[in-house]
Image 1 (spheres, rainbow, N blue to C red):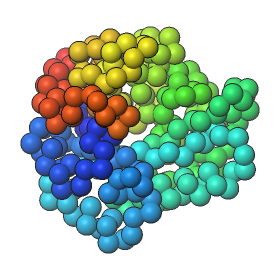
Image 2: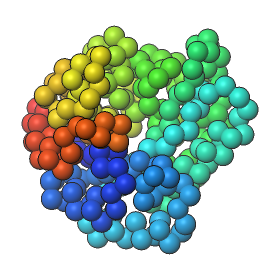
Image 3: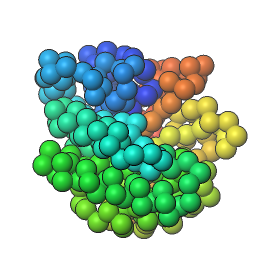
Length: 263
């Protein structure tokens, strides 16, 4: 398995510094948070995109994904959501990122209605993603935090360019064991977001292996399924500014995840 980290752990950090972190601490990829607070986002002009591509190529690091904030199951008209998806796909394509992350965001709607909204929008965007060489990934999150929730949507979409991103925190919070999550997601899985936290009631980020998440069981389930893709460490420094800075735990996290990935 290959290792990446998310820029959610280094909010606002310029791309050259992000890449210096990656190469210094042994990460082969970076998940770019695609938000206006960050150096690269859907509103970035062509010059910024081209410079970002050059810097990643020079560093020998993969821009694994652009982590967007489109909510594909959100109530309301389709057009604004489809516009967000198109912008996110274009950004990923321009940067050479194979994946673009989206959220469910179904709120309190009945599950069937939220599933139908998400599937319709993802299905509509799928041909554009295919043309761009980008795979849209629906994250296990909020209204669809369990693998079985995301599996329902992806089964309705039925397009290879629409897959799943497994955020191991949310399936755990949803009471779903890794042995259940992996078989449900494996036909669709793009990559895996790993993290650790203090407790179910305190989501302050911790270095992997220092909190309560069953990361060993998660990786073991992936290994049994024969999956050897990307593990991306999402350290949520942006939401918990009092947490230990990512720069101080980057080595420990890479070493722990590397041991897990090596079996």
